[in-house]
Image (tube, rainbow, N blue to C red; front, side, top):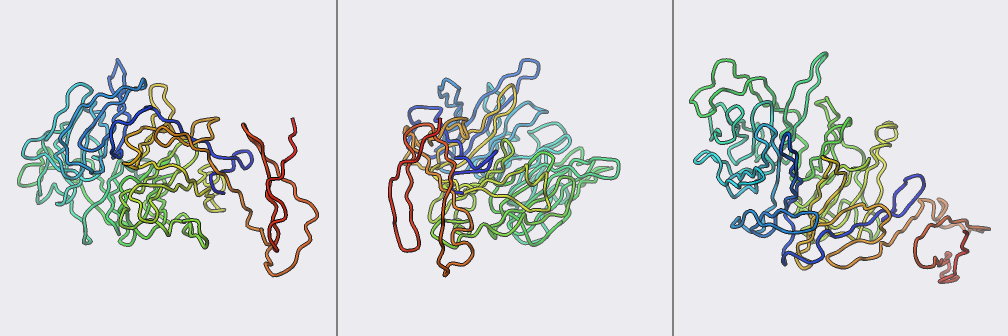
Length: 436
């Protein structure tokens, strides 16, 4: 099912369009986010990261560079915190940056400002983030006082290795819901939870009532792909594992599972086994309109070039059947994707991953569009639908096929058919009958 999916029948997938008609430079997009803020006067800004810059890209589109001078070429993560109504920007090397829609503040927290890996993550009344020392936290309801390699406030792993990602995750009890965080290493995941994370995280000892904790849930599976950790409403948390599979932590549960066998290819088409393991940070997943989209860099690529789509309607309605995947989806070179779904928005955006193409922002899965925007070009999407019964289960047995029926849909051009059998090509470019 290359470049097609089942949606009331097998259909070609929707394509993409570019937001900006000319490049903002010969770089790749390192991260993107729609920042919604404003309280009683709601507004929003689209942020992207590329090279050393953070920019606001309007719908017009117009670019406004709000920050420059960052270390070049680092994957960049964004997270909005409702308590301060601000967005936080991290790349693992530069100190944590904050933007409130007007002012950019770098190195928030002064000497305690973390060089956060992956996006910061809220829990109850504070932020948490990953550093080489472990998981650091703020004082209640502020972002400018952080723990620093504390003996009690810094949460450390039980197995060797750095933390790679954090994601909010609520734990359901018999009659309660407790907020928590799932923390992931490359080969393990943990639950961070508590009701009181301390009044002063810079103190030498924990205060009265502090009960923040970290618990190892599984020491065999984790992720090296922070952008692949994706929450699906009502279903749970998914991520791409370091052994090239997809793991599912059901909503409210602490016991996860692989969603199924790996999407391995036995032919020329690249499957998940072809993921570039030197570029696992380039894997991303996002959920939009009933589809969990997994995008991987294959071969030697450092940006995601092949997508597989998992049908969440099937998983929700018929979990006993296992996952239903569509793909591979080829033709796009999107390094990151994000959903814009507040204040009347319902759009999936993506950023160009190939620096030779340049800095472009795309609208993905555009209805009634069947070309892919790659820079300024609009490339036709090539769809291939092949049933698993091409040889009728017995490759060596001669067949007598009396008739073939195919339903096709198209919007431009004329449909043609190439007909082949076991001995070779019988006919090429045969016009198909048009029914109106």
